Image (cartoon, rainbow, N blue to C red):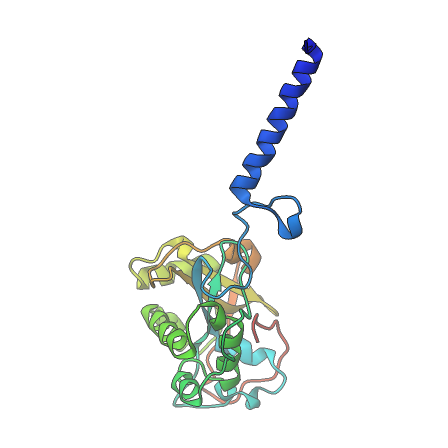
Length: 258
């Protein structure tokens, strides 16, 4: 005869065993046979495994004010025929929280010269074109041509409000005003589909991010684009485009990915 106390102990042991087996069945064994991990943990650097795209448009005058030799960058040189305002920084595959980068590929992530040349009107830096594919494009699961074809398509889908196309004096606006201006110019864009980043001296506008599904539709941004993380300033300073001469040299906050 099994005593009542022994029976209770056996029943408890059975419940613990059943729970462990259920957890292994649901989540699988952890690395190296260690404790199981949640299947909800996002993949890190696997091509094609991400949740959404963030189209990142940099404010060129802020970038040029942050580098020591602005004349060394094509977009920072005085060009009356093309005073750069918003330019394409990149198209970033994102997880809902965090992002993949430098994803392994079967072939070396080489960007052909013709592809580079074809992007310079909206992404005026060969070095940036190469860098963005290696760091971010490899995680899209697309080859360089496919990645930059999609980048251009999404960049051209976003209509820049008129007041930001060629301002000839410093603008001082709130991040919320910038968002509202873009919402009015882009039907279908939602308030949580766009984020403003600022930094450096005077909380200058650094970039605007617009979030898309893999199919190219506007969608909500993830935790990477929270307002508090990207710009907590009440007012943002927007330097004018370079239409009257070379930009002055200043130091400021740089950009992710450069």
